[in-house]
Amino acid sequence: QLQASGGGLVQAGGSLRLSCIISGRPFSNYVVGWFRQAPGKEREFVASIGWGGYSTTYGDSVKGRFTISRDSAKNTIYLQMNDLNNEDSAVYSCAAEEVTHPATVRDEAYTYDYWGRGTQVTVSS
Image (cartoon, rainbow, N blue to C red; front, top):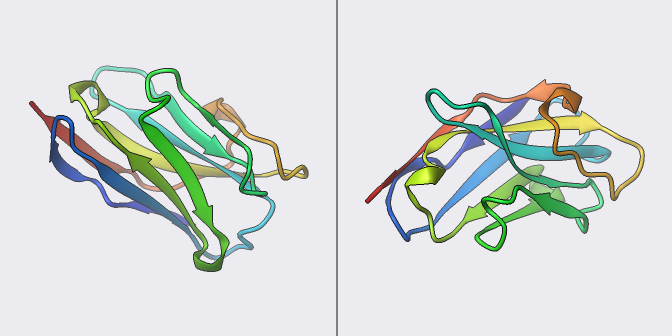
């Protein structure tokens, strides 16, 4: 089970940190990704981190502003979002997939087997 939290209302230029807690299954061996979807738009890849914790990849629109990380002791994945703008407003969801290699990252939603309920992020100008 995955549960995303940490969303809210923030002014443009501000920051938020989202959390994704994984429960009910071993935390290791899972690549985790963040995706977002705004009303009327397609789901968009945001970031992914391998289960080794050292391999990451980001969507072009968030590179340099967002950082994904994982805390194995807490079974939690974080998404630190800085310099937010209106285009970042969306429902953010985390997803997980069991993989073999610790450096594997995924940017395609269809590859993920497990999804959590999203958390709303709203950026006001």
